[in-house]
Image (cartoon, rainbow, N blue to C red; front, side, top):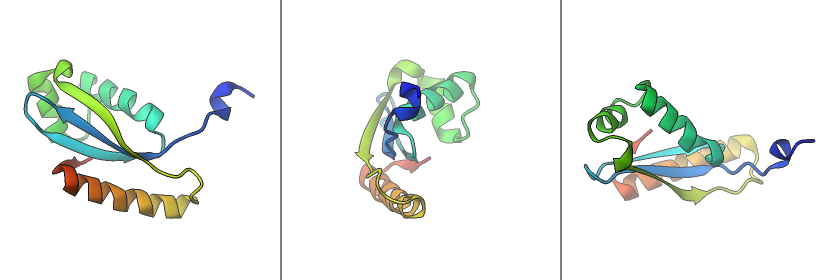
Length: 102
């Protein structure tokens, strides 16, 4: 079995920040190891589905953005429980960071 299939998949909450505008976006992902690449790819292509994030990226450019993992969730949780916890934690962090949820 390949190392890729054996790797631990960590879900959780992340934040995307624009230092130029001070804006913050918060999101959740079942696989934190892949989400930044996915976001940056869609932003570079101009196809991100979150209008405020895409327009801020278009104005300020990639160099103005940072990505950070805010909270890692316990991988032991069963799917539907993990999904509920992830939604609750995203709401918490979006409020705490005054972020737009994505």
